[in-house]
Length: 248
Ligand code: HPA
Image (cartoon, rainbow, N blue to C red; front, top):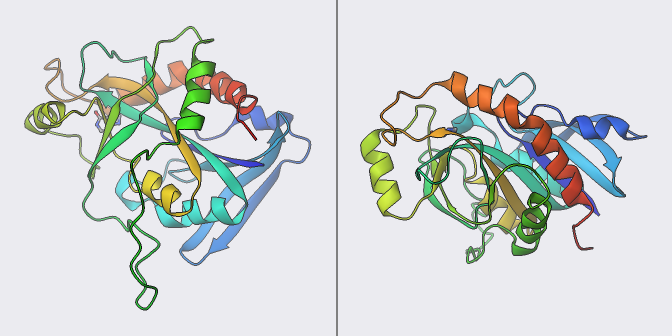
């Protein structure tokens, strides 16, 4: 079994892979572009680690080549993918520092290539998104999350915005009424593309801030980065733990 790990903001390397005996840097060409990733081994699994924003956090969320990333993981044999996503919270009872394992999403992206099924002559394909985040992998993450000294919310709705700007208070108030719990800029189309490739995909959301208008404080990129650095060790431990819990 090969497991993909997509590192979001603040997760640029996966130190757990350093114990790997066969750590390889790869450049993998797909029909959608070239992807740089690390391949290694841990807890009896082959792992592919892919920093979503590229080496050095160079690619903004609306310009990430989601199709190349997901196709590369698929072509390298990944059956499961664990992603990390920094998010803002729309709920006072979900404070910064907590983690959340989303079970559903709202898509408010605007300009992204959102499917592999857009070539003329290939017919029409509609992918089921009734359970967009893999229930089995979510269960494994929730079980592993019980062992860490940080609150892990076992479900929640992720609203994905286009970015790169943060949202307005009016947008956040609307999303909250519509059922969203956390907001970020990267889960879509990644989760939907995983569905098209039949990859079992789940996300660990790291709540880095309250979303716009929730507390009245202005939002800064610095608070996102600061909270990510506070949670990086917990996140690595959680991912290593979950590797041992993924059913074959
Ligand atoms: N909005 C969008 N994306 C984010 C946020 C936010 O408040 N925090 C971290 N990523």
